Length: 68
Image 1 (cartoon, helix red, strand yellow):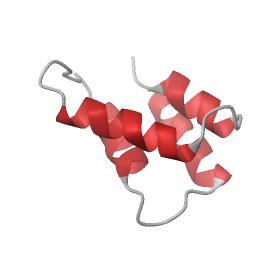
Image 2: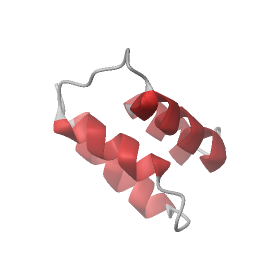
Image 3: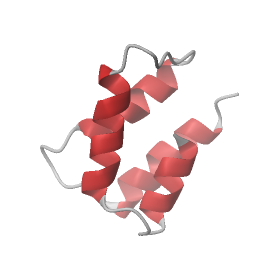
Image 4: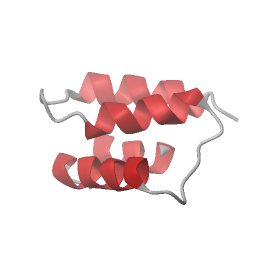
């Protein structure tokens, strides 16, 4: 997820694609995350109700980078 947030923050991935990836991972029966932070990042990206700012993306990326 950190990679997805990184390319999103670097403007190399459209937000719509990141939202699609997040939705696919959330709905997948084969994807299991071991940390709640990853789940929060996925749900953060999948929420298209409001446009994300660069600051919000960077904050999510920073939170995720602390996950081991």
